[in-house]
Length: 342
Image (spheres, rainbow, N blue to C red):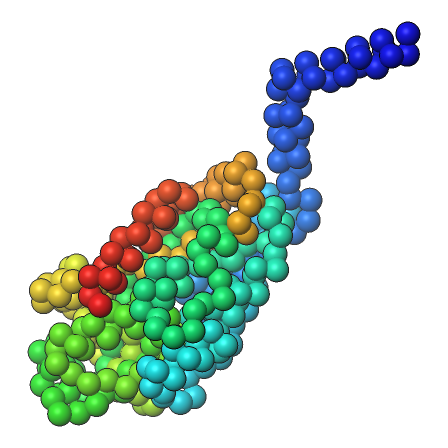
């Protein structure tokens, strides 16, 4: 009799599982996620565009996820000296250029933990294709893309005293000189686009690498460098006050708005080394697809808030809530562009 009861119990359990019991258990687990605060790591400098976006979006944590979102940073300050490409290639994984240390540290995170990191094409589409020495201690396959948080167009600005206002005047001023240019890290899409543009212009440059485009434009404002590449919002104040001058936008077309009205895009000069800079939320590899979808839907609701949309407009960035497939497609397009210019 006891054996018969055991058999009946096992049969009942199997029938429940076959009828979707496993799905029901999984659904209940996802419904309860997260059971603790969500942490979102920005691997770049405090005060930068992505850091500001991260902190603004975090304000909706309780409302959307029933848990607070803790916006934090994990980065190493750089830019005190200008160094050669070979040296940078050797030490970047150690220094944290472009957020590399943060991405490596994030590997300690377990799948399904409510801990996310913000990535971009820098570490996953640019650096792996241009690095010639030490490999990065992490790879794209260590992460799961969730949702794109914002996209932006970079602008090159110059010290106003140099009277560089477009690529023609840049070429004329830079002839026979080595121009010092500040960028937000040498593992960045802006560094790659800058380097290719200078090669096509036949100009020499010396790069000062910072961990954040806001730090790069600050160096230009202080007169420490000749030019800088940053997000438009980061350069806006300097342009308005006349301290720095816009030179070119790293986009197919120029701008007809605000202080950048009339500034041409790289594409209008016939060059092709340009693309949008997109920042996206990433989870640890192995995180359940249902959790990723839940976070995607939650952040999509946050991005639809009126105050968030106004913030993006003020910061001159775009809302493009790309999903995992669209993020992968973007990275593939950037990889293709980088390889075609090597």
